[in-house]
Length: 233
Image (tube, rainbow, N blue to C red; front, top):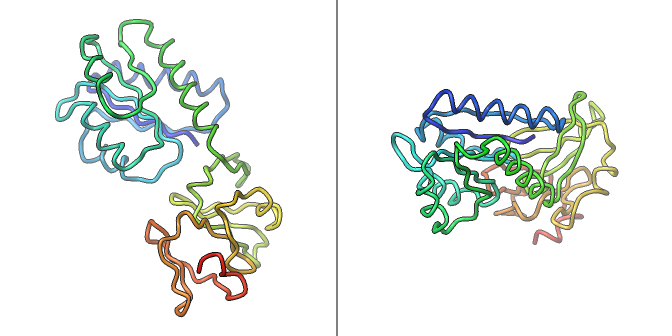
């Protein structure tokens, strides 16, 4: 799932960006969602705070309450992995972006081959995302790609006979066997129970006596067995 967060105070241009994204993504047969904003307001900041997979921000340099550069700093403080694409109708503002300290995909002039440069930038962002380890699976007929870093743990539902992949933003029930899922996990995952593997990079607290694990987003689980907990001690 690719999440596009688009902000531009010009309604016509915002729709133009949305149309260009739709056109590109339809050709690539990749699941995506678009979030549209006309300013860097509270609702925009709420999206920044949300843990969503594969975020591509398309940001207007000039907005009513805040500059795109300032909002990019806020984004980077919370999220170093998302892609940033800047838009402006004023070429002279490009120097402000180029002098900034954060990594971004591109700076696009709204009036200079806009759609061509935008689709090229989106393609570059997706290629970068693909370099990160991901797990691909189907849930209710829909194909998903989830970054390993977004997975908290996987477990097995003995009633439904399905495996559950728990991430920051959703739980997915898949028909793969537990051993099949385990075979594609990377070295960040360790077994803590006969029916659970956790992402040790996301663990911030392990209480052996009370038998619980806390992840960096506050989620806790008690799927722990002394037989398997050695790598967490």
